[in-house]
Image (tube, rainbow, N blue to C red; front, side, top):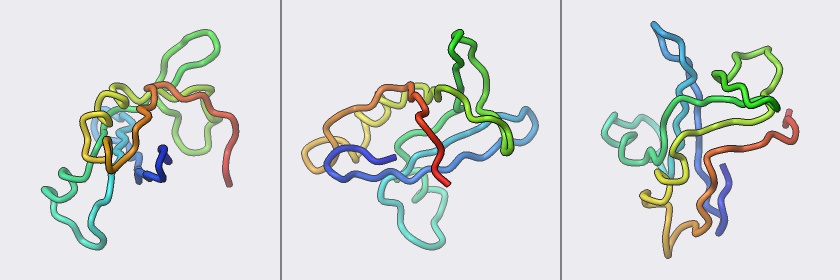
Length: 108
């Protein structure tokens, strides 16, 4: 995710085991190479289940690989989490994104 002032957040989505849910994480300035759980937790600025919405307002989970892309993505509490993160402020980004993103196309 690219924010203002050139701030870039790295992200990953993995499906959980048991009750399958698309769990996403956004990280800011994580150390390279092998990192400990504590180091990863310290650089994670948002994490949660990723939801989708269609034009009728129906909410669902992010579809799996090979399925059609959804119209909108919902990252619950993204804005609030980012505003509380080390990536926000005088030395970081200043425009807090909303929790809902409309997809305009796919990058291949």
